[in-house]
Length: 306
Image (cartoon, rainbow, N blue to C red):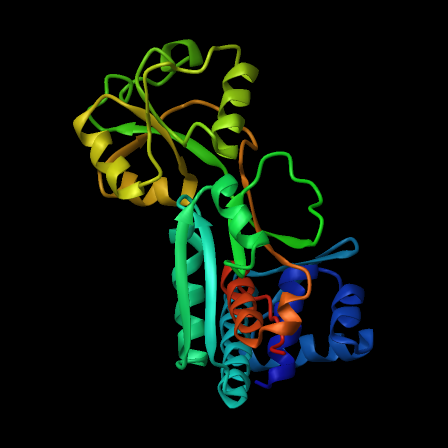
């Protein structure tokens, strides 16, 4: 089985049309069909089934496509890593990040960055967008990562979407609402809440969410950015709060939190990166970290180094 075979099966899993696979790989459609036939001969069983104009992978094809994705991703990472090491990148990257995003996107990116550039340093500052953005403008931060409400253009600042993930409403397992299958927002706002800082974008967005749900924002609040402290507060007090869905799942599995049946829609679901225009060209360490961040936040997407 060759690298070409792997790219074809991976392309089929993504595009499901021979024409799209051939365009993505810049080969002819007969060449793609030939690779499919060769793959089926190698594994000894069909890997696709056709329905009208679309292709569907068989269970064997799906398993093969997953192996192909992992192998191709590892090869891309290896090439990226070697090129980065050969470049001898050094220097410091200063990153500002909101607490709800940091544990989701930074650990893997930092690991990849440090493996590729052991002589480069990272400095991480947690806060909220309003407090961190002036530091980005002043050049004290190279990168700002934040959840965004009502995004817009910012003069002299480039930005890109890093991830989309919903926030969910959580409580400690001992909270009186934890066992209820149906909860209204009117019931929820009667309880104390852990909320973002009063001057933050997240706080204003939260106020808008409460208004959209037809309730007044809770008056009994604790303003805290610390996920570690908040987790302890959920155990000690009958408080409610908002958590990123992926982090909430981790703590639910550990028996520490419960996700309440309250709909939040797309509220603060988008996290973006912000950096000064031209910084990627001027700072090789920052350019490398951005490549690491985009690779690890979007698995399977290869971002060339340099």
